[in-house]
Structure formats: structure tokens, C-alpha cells
Length: 230
Length: 230
Image (cartoon, rainbow over all chains, first blue to last red):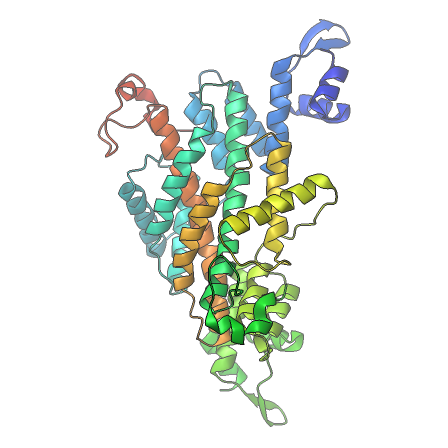
């Protein structure tokens, strides 16, 4: 198809497609005439991936280039292609130096080993978790995240069922990125919803006719059934 | 204690404390002389809370003011004080108009009802989840988030055990904010770690002597044991 049709079918503006071509995010079409190139489904797939990384993954262009380069490198095993995208989704954490950091990293590796996980040593998630553990420790909070690790393990097994590991690479990467970000957001929102509900129940604010049953204190606290102010 | 001691004991710079006083984030001390005020543990607790909201919660000053006002309002039930802080932690989502949005909101409420949750109608988490469901639908992805809701429910029950609902309000709010943000980060990181590990296992890349057992393909794919590139 010509570039105009690529634009129509992908829903991406012509100027944007040309920008992606210039930046090397989108591979060149097949040059069939001096001023005309032919594009195909591979370009449609690539545009879908770029949009996913940009709009849902909110990745900067430099990171998208990295992912695209990994996708285009036929010698790179698919696990590493997926990894390049997956790693780009997390925050960038600068490791610290000193004993507290080393202890946090050691605890991180103990958690990984405890779950029987296979994590490459340079995975950015190691520094990510270490930083969170260090912050918890500095604030005097519990650093026992075992139950989160176990919940994550169960969730992730089902997550990976949705990733088509045998499909064209762009499709697998796209599914991984969209699934990681969007279902991750859903999980975070749902956890906070569950917090609100659990708090309401513990404070005796459950409405009398809710499925969770009556709480006698709720009658006395009747005026509070409107819940927290926004 | 004098303001200088408040600074030393809290670890907050004097100029910053004065800024908080001016902004009404920190309540005034007791004026004991023309140029001297006395501060106490309530001021220490408030400074801890402000730092938590600012540095961990990453809330803007306006949101911190809202939380502080809720904390200071003795007529406000504690559930609503917690709610003010908790709601401020989520992203701001602009509701859309039209049928797709309404459908996403209806699905959100069905999920809430299905879990037997008590969520106030103006909770920002409703629009948050609706937006994620709408995005999933537009991308042709599954909007079945039941397993995430169930995981969230189990996690949140244990989370709420760590919130001292009877403690001074600042302490309860501080615990809620720190726990929500920091354990939320840990959960997200752990999920992505579990993704990496699960992917490695499914692609047969588990090292031969790992606790997860041998995968015969791993011998053939021996060179891939270094995992994804960063």
C-alpha cells in the first residue's frame, strides 16, 4: 500500500509517519519508484507497536528506538526482545553506594531466590525493589514484602497466558507492554478501592443493606454513609 | 520546644518549617513571647506527615493543604480524613461523555458490587478504573479484571492491618499514605519480576540447576542464560 493508505489504515497522521521513518522507528517501505514506496502489514504492526509504547507505555522516543532495534534484530532471542521493552516500562532507579544499599539489594535477591524466580542480574527491577526496601527501612516500616511477592507470582502467571510468545515479535511486545501497563493500572486502582472498602468496614460504616451485612455501629453512624469527602 | 529544636528533631530545615507555617501546612506554635513560639509533639507528627505526602506521596502543595485541613477538622470522621489523603494519591482522571464512558463506568460499578465493596460514588477511583477499562476495550483487549480485583481484595485486607485506625490522625494518615505508595510500588515491581521469570520459564531459559528444575531446551539454548539485554 502507499503511504497515504498506511496513514488511513493505521489512523496515524501522514506527518507523524514521516517523522517515524526519519527517526528510524518505522522501517522503510519498498522503493518502487523515485518518489514512491510500498508499505505492508509489517508497517501496520510496527505503527501499532509504536503507538502502544508511546501512548500507553508513555515511553520517550529514545526508549522506543531501543525497543524497535531489539524487534528488528533477528539474532536476538525473543526473551531479550520482550525484556528490552519490559525493562523500559519501569522507572529509572539510580543505585546508591554504601552498606544500606547493599543490604537492600541482598534482601531483593533473597526475595527473588525465595520465589524461585529467574531474573537476570542487570534487570532494572532489582534496583527498583532495593530502593523501595531502603525507603521502607529508613521510615521504620516493615520490609517484609513476601505476601506481595506471592500475590505478584499468581497474577503474573495468568498475565503471561495473554502474551502470544510465538506471534510476530511486534505483536508479542505490544501485548506485553499493553498488558503490563494497563492491567498494572487496574490492579493499583482496585487495590485502592479495596482499601477504601476495607477501611469503611473496619470503621463500621457499611450501609445496613450491603451484601457485606449489617454493622450495628452503622446505624448510629448513619450520617457517615456518604463516605469520605473527595 | 523552640523552632530551632523542632528543626533539629524533625530534620526539616528552619526555612522550610517557616514556609510550612506561612502556607498553613504546619499549625502555629503557642505564642509565649513576642518573637517566640513553643512547639510540641503535634508539630513533629505534622512535619512527618508533610514529608511523607511530599516525598513519598509526591503530592503538590495544594493537595497537601487539603489533607492537612481534613486532619485538622475535628468534626470530620476519620474515614473521611483517610479518604481525603487516599484519593489524592491517585491520578486525576477526567471523565468522558458518551456511551462508551457510561458503559465503562457501569462495568466498574458491577466489579465493585461483585466484590461486595463499599465505595463512595464520588471516589476518583471509579473514573480511574473506567478509563482503564475503556482503553482496554478500544484496544480490543479483555476487560475481565476479576482476578485482579480478587488479588487486590486479599492484598488490601492485610494492608489495612498496618493502619492504626485509633492512633492520632496524622499517624493514621501517614501510615496509609506510605503504605499505599511504597507497598504499591513493591507490588508493581514484583509483578514485573514475576513476568520476567515466567517468560524465561515458558521460553525454556531456566538455568539447569535452578530450583524451578531443568528445562531440556535450556541446554540447547545455553547461550541465552544471560537473559534479556537491558
